[in-house]
Length: 129
Image (cartoon, rainbow, N blue to C red; front, side):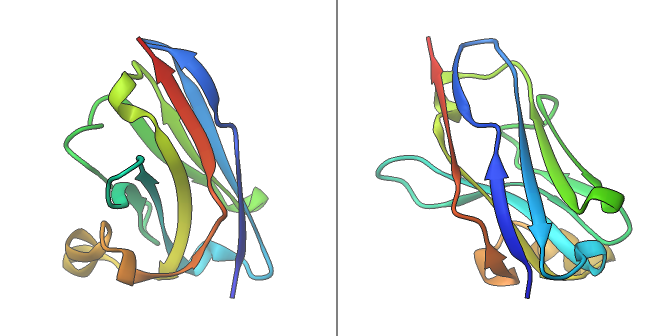
């Protein structure tokens, strides 16, 4: 099991940037697939970005070209760089850790909540117009 703690959320204006961090403890997550999810008020939680054990990444269409997921295994930290933020990006953002997958299984499952077993408590991102 891995414990996850997100940070870096805040309030920014449209077009601004934020970098979210997710610090992992309890177990090295080098063997896990990691993901960022978000949930806006009144909406279901959705997958934003994922990264697998080979370092391959995947993104929701709504954030492609604006968000970048990365990780520093030496620091046991996952990141989400968010640029060109829009009001519709306003949400609580969560990081998650799941069974390490590669290839087709990663591409099929990275955005599914059921593919992850450990979750952080979330960090709020608010983008004003």
